[in-house]
Amino acid sequence: MYLCLQIIYVMKRVFLVLALVFVSFLARPQDTIKIMTYNLLYYNHYSQTWCTQTNNPIESKDGWLKTIIDYTLPDIVAFNEVANNSTTKYRLKGSVLNTSGRTNYMEANNPYGAGGLTSFLFYDKNKFDLVEIYNIDTDASRDFMVYRLRRKNTNPEINLYVIPAHMAAGSYSEDIAERAQMADSVINLISSRGNNDNFIFLGDLNFYTHTESGFQKLVNNSNPEYRFYDPVNQLGAWNSNYSFRNYHTQSTHTDDDGCKASGGLDDRFDIILVDDDILSGASRVKYVENSYTTVGQDGNHYNSSLIDGANTSVPANVLTALYNMSDHLPVFAKFALGETSSSPAYSLSNVKINYVNPVTDQLAVQIFAPAADNYEISLMTSTGVVLEQETRWVANSDVFVFDVKMLQSGIYFLSIRNSEGRCTRKIVKL
Image (cartoon, rainbow, N blue to C red):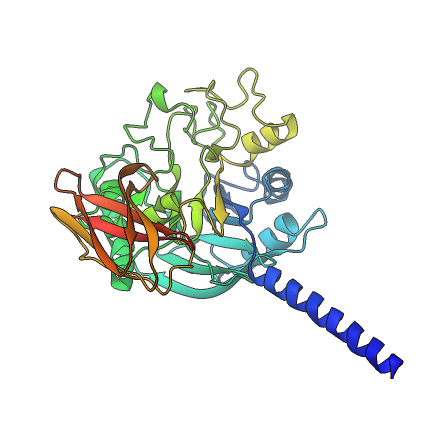
């Protein structure tokens, strides 16, 4: 009898421990990931006559890129301007990413797109599952793909939509028109889904200024629901503009070796754009402030070579690898996944919240409370700045009214809080 009681006691303890482990496994705390984009300059592509095995040797590029990856260690990385074949994909995976003891990188796609060059996406398979792939047919020189990645072992689930892009290059009118056409295709795909929750658009975008029509289609779309945002808000005429010296990504060289562009660092071609949900954290993915980084850019090499004079922004071996690897610099940003200070708390599921959306002059928020409680309702910008706030005791139902007619068109958020927690709702102001 005593032995039986002991066994039962031990089994209860084991069950309790397993239950606690399971709950903590599902309720994963907030963690931070790094997403990077990098133009690899005709990686393993030799059908052109100007970038050859002599001035762009693949074996040396693997070593330089490995040094850069060892230093940056991105969780998700998009490579632009690589040869459009499986050999290239597996070379990047086996000779660069899964080295130095790493085995966690997984490719997201087979070769795609028109022409001999493409983009590849790799992700940490220990952190993400690849759930879906959408094709964006741009009717232009390059197609794009949308990758839906789901963070492993999260409840509620966290999804991230990543679009690696390599827009048409050049400053002629036909180049500008082609970039606009590509931007249209991206927005059309997003609008067909009905929202752009947790979308990241990144790559070598080849825009010279934020006023270019294609860039405006991305960041100033007529429907605020489908807009992208520059997380560092560095909009302007980037080309040959000293004011943007901290964000210029091309060119790392002033000399002309026949392959790399010359002219020094004076263009912001490589950019990471995010949607409003990621700025606010409304869908459990949030941009980490001050994490946007142009690797190797110290702001002191405007119109000059990356290695002209001192540059201590990265270790010396990384600086050498960046200079030799490509005429572009990689860009990364960090993102917090999970509960953030402005993300839904999911504990107000029994509270009914009614309002008309989009809004024009007045936002009326009706609360139906299952139990009497104190409610704080805040109207915020997409970056979390509180514009108006009301606090009131709600015993059954009540209406909170905000005057929004003077607000600019765009995306705003409602934060609704009671003693149990908080939730966030998106508002579109027309």
